[in-house]
Length: 211
Image (cartoon, rainbow, N blue to C red; front, top):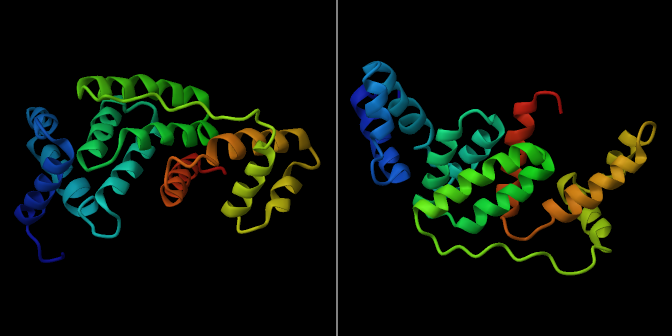
């Protein structure tokens, strides 16, 4: 890696950008080059040539991580749209994107998640995807507390009581609400791989810097 030239990194990055961007993959960097050729080159060499080309994660999962980061950012909507499409180009499914929104609502909250729904819908519409809405959950919700507790224990390696203890002196009801909804209804869903959920949650919490 240390002996690679700009051309090596650019070529590798351009190929990765092609895989993610699909048709008109170079449109954004060509537009950027009209302002600064070096900035356009940096965008290909570093994010795509050095980072996204690494072998540690498969490409759909890397794209899901990128979508998660942009979802938390909230201000980079064109990039969010580009990388949602890139996730699909990389072999990801529309259902996984929608299931990511369920995880998002439990961690980022409703405003950030609802803001992203329109972008998701526009990507699906532009690709003319025959997407069927996710079926509503069945049951009366009585078991969500148990499901939430199980999910919490899975996430914290069994120390669920420590989670409740953090709320004991201030708002124990809030702890139960978060178990019922956040863990029991949103995070306990089966539509997204557990590893992908954990990576998305880690990205969101690292961006908050205070959790």
